[in-house]
Image 1 (cartoon, rainbow, N blue to C red):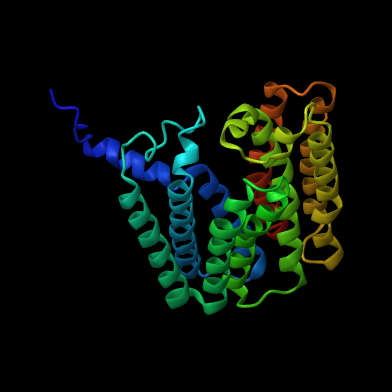
Image 2 (tube, rainbow, N blue to C red):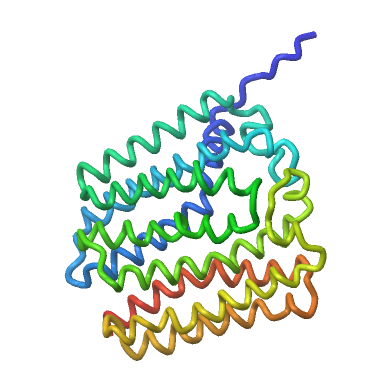
Length: 295
């Protein structure tokens, strides 16, 4: 009797390769890139340039996500939520995953440097290097990995800005700061939900290294609180107006309020509420910006 795994149908193989690109994270990265692009040049949008920016960013993000799957393949085997991922499940070999990730990343970089500009390509490359070679290994070393990882996590917004403006002005760094702060409650919510799995893999997430999550909850509320005034700096600089002020304020307070139940009772359900709110925040902020600029 042969124990050799039978080849999967092409449809399943395709789905597995898509999963390697981390579609949910890539979606949020594309939203932040679009935010940066739109704010970086409020004149008539160059649809072709915008499309090439998004395609290059999509490929670069998908490639980085795939390489991350390759790097963490042995750790993924230890966690219940990741055991069924394509590499640990044996659907895609480590070699093929690495080749796929490198190809996506290289093609994405070529698109950005050839059809967009060098600044955007450089920011994209730095983002990938920080994600793979700094943030990923730090998950096993220090709970500050969340804060350090928020740097490459916020950089796609700079890439979008650079694509449309070919420079980074103070407003670009305001957007970077918004994304930097937004990530903390988002990823702490995930860490609270996956605490036991992270413990198995030896990830030094803040909820893992403390017993009652008090510091985690303080970090969540502190960053959500700071997000409100920082997001309103766009009004101070004059790039956005009254509609944005009220919209961003409402979204910011909604995000903050969604984290309060965790202080009363640190449960998976309360962490899910925060996570859902965080996922809504970015696309909603993009809509508010669009409405403000077109009012």
